[in-house]
Amino acid sequence: MNTDGDFHSILVSQDDGVAWLTLNRPDKLNAFTAGMHREIREALSRVQQSPDIRCLVLTGAGRGFSAGQDLADLDLSAVGDVVEEHYNPLLRTITSLHIPVIACVNGVAAGAAANLALACDIVLAARSASFIQSFNQVGLVPDGGGTWTLPRLVGLARATALCMTGEAVPAEKAEQWGMIWRSVADETLVEETATLARRLSCQATTGLFYTKQLLRLSQTRSLEEQLDLERDYQQAASRTDDFAEGVTAFLDKRKPHFTGR
Image 1 (cartoon, rainbow, N blue to C red):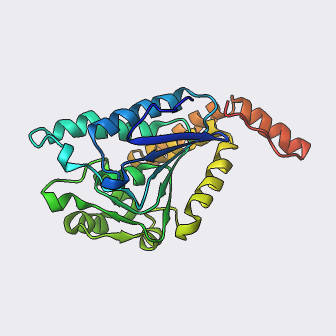
Image 2: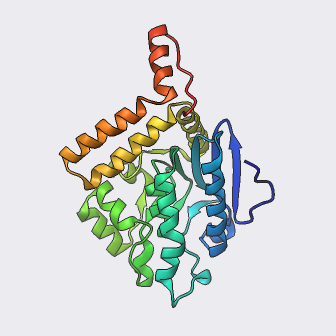
Image 3: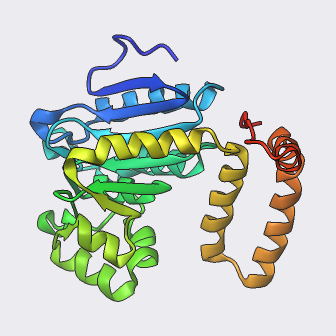
């Protein structure tokens, strides 16, 4: 995936099967603009098309993950159109990627950026990081899937209070509440994220994709419907090359070499 010089408000790099997408407007706390959204869409399209990328990491440059929408770049007369044109497609793409997606939250994640991070498959956050539903401060409602994701992570009572008060949730509390996977020391965040990303990229990533789809679909289906889905996805997973390799490696008492196919 060639990215040299292609982007201005994001950085994209690839190493060992892992793509890193870094929001790169540190002077504006990586706030989203229409231009940034266009670049993210292009980068994610390249990620989707690359057979060599088997895990994606989202993070931010500088002292924060992202402050959310850049209000100076917002058409105040068409906020709903901005959500429909930019944020909704972004969330749909992130949640449907065929590879694991890790949010590496290096500082504050506010507004739509908080909800983007929480929509990722696994969230690692620096202990100095925090998550803020800041929409109430400008008279708006949570978007970026926040009203769907947050109640499922922390419960309706906490989600309601967080959205109405805009109170920041420190990373350690977010971990305690089950909002994120883990909070780690600031100085080890990138290293721990990279280790996790490499670990996931070496696994049977088609099986991981089926797993995350099943978990997401379980939120809106009955047990009977979910049992049928598990049967269907298991049948699909059993037809992959990785399943054959996994069984062979187990019988041969060796480590499997998965290819994501």
